[in-house]
Image (cartoon, rainbow, N blue to C red; front, side, top):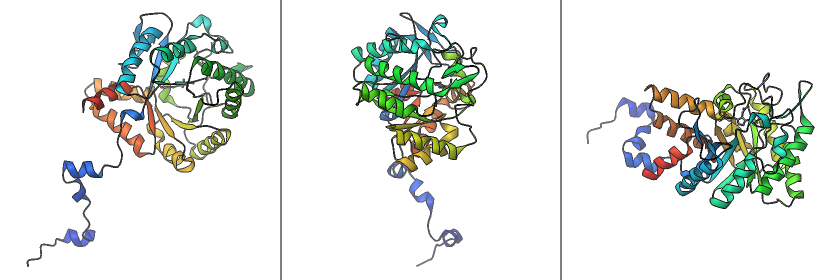
Length: 337
Ligand code: PBG
């Protein structure tokens, strides 16, 4: 028998990684992670009025919608199988004030939206944020007093807002304002109000990031914001601090954890999933979306391919799901294939 062994066999010890990659069927058989429609949470922007679909310039393909139009869009999303929606309100400027008091109006835009969706599209989950930034005249997530974002007073307010959002039908409260003690306070407030079944998805590690730029145009806070959010969001340099912050949220009763932004923080996704084992989500934020869209619109990258690749990478990094502005586009694509 002739010996066809090659030097490469000797070098690799007869192991060849390419054997499993040689055909479409082997590649399918060995694929470790997949994106399915069950992984998608759709963040949407809502605005007052009726019959309005208003394109957001900095986020090509994303619109602000009045509640009636949002309900229509969510009917389609639910039909596609998207499990949940995360609404963000762009409210009238005259309703914004230094304490974000509008968040405590029982019938504010976000709660109107929740009631309408619960009635019209009951099979989609609603995940609401309680940060104050859409409601404050200064664009900060908390109450501003003498140049300081005050922690405890903000926690009191977001806890009350969380109960009102749950009263309106929100399924999961997702506080993004990074105040200390907020998860425990919200849990206690929800339980005291009889909302034991309403969950908390903590924006456990929210970094002080440049990737949020287009979102601030979407809800018109960009021009309002004085200073930065460095006194409450996490420094992008700090992974260990992020883990410590997430551990406190776990102790305080978070049901789910989120990492935000997503792609530049995959190490944090992995560490959190490994450390806590809780359902873990990445938020592919506005700037991440816009980068892909803008380059694709210029013909510089294959946008659809990169959309799918980034989502798959979140799965590989241990995420159970992704908040993404691509949600409906992805769901439609998955439904076709
Ligand atoms: C603030 C909030 C932000 C986002 C959602 N809620 C960040 C910010 O404005 O500082 C960003 C979402 C995105 O960029 O897609 N509570």
